[in-house]
Image (cartoon, rainbow, N blue to C red; front, top):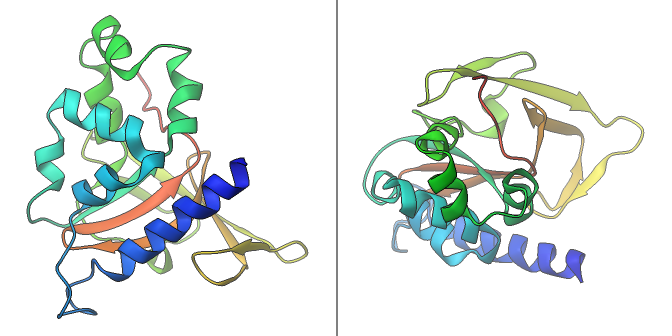
Length: 182
């Protein structure tokens, strides 16, 4: 069931990704990062966090962003049984800091990433990119439609859906919430 839900979500994301890039699809309406997050069930916790912190509007309009978007499962692991709202109430300001740590101020495709690269987030601290070759056991990546020869990690979070092109940036789906150093 979990794999079915994941595959369904990846199909939805892939469909939306093909409808978001202005350059590639001039006849289709552009779709913002905020809209992709809103309509993707696996991002409901991320959507709630963006709404609570007032950051949704940042991703509705124009801009050039790269968002490393954690799934609901990733949020659940960090929240320790709390809802997003309860977490924000118990830890004022932390949620906004964590969310900004998931965003770069430029469009960065997975092909632009290099091993050991550091990139400054909107929060101010750097994230680190690790590229791990899958020489012997490549994973099949449904979004790529092929075997993933190289896994991408942002800090310790694996990117499992990449290069979702939107009118105002790029989304990469990750399996953990990134936590900045305190």
